[in-house]
Length: 274
Image 1: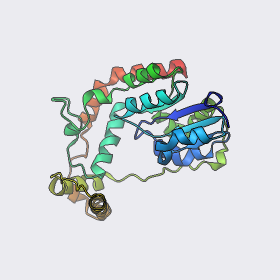
Image 2: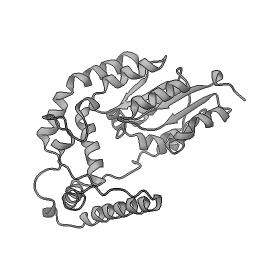
Image 3: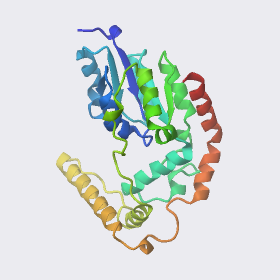
Image 4: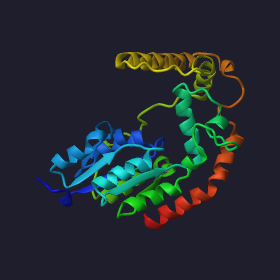
């Protein structure tokens, strides 16, 4: 059995809403010459790696707020591991994060999702900075990370894939890669309608039951209700959603300007080491 010293470990750590799910199901499984451990096996990655005869291993998951906590665990396991992280410009990233929360029934307006006035939003101002995440990776690992930009995946996916495969030192066949997204996006109309429903029906937090099966029933009930609303919303007249946009453009512009310096630092960092 190979020792840990003979293995090269790579961690893809997200971020969330940067194409992680697509890579985990449409690209990583088709890499040749590396053992791939995807997110459903993440909790067992240490045992899997220890038992594996592969000399290269790629572990993939996606983290946002939990990133530094998980980096510490990865460091304890292997400080020589190499990290892959994908960044998305802050306004686009927050917009995508917000749409996910609305889809999941969180019925708050965007200015309460990221609150620049009182910093009491679902996301805190400091949590949205990227550059400190890159510094944390440098703090815990011997190697600088491979930093990729989400827009590049959309502009030229195969050039994006080539950068990953080169960093891993592996190959893949273009014919194996499906370019269609893993999950479909919901329309603005659907999201605005479920947000309306959510403000009425999801406002109160229900105390979860201590019994596991009751918690599961509560979870499935909420999920069923959400998807019923989403699919029904697709059939509803557009007027039901109202005229106002899901996310006002001026609020997204404020996000972009607020984090502009952080984004420029990240682009400079990515260009300097890649």
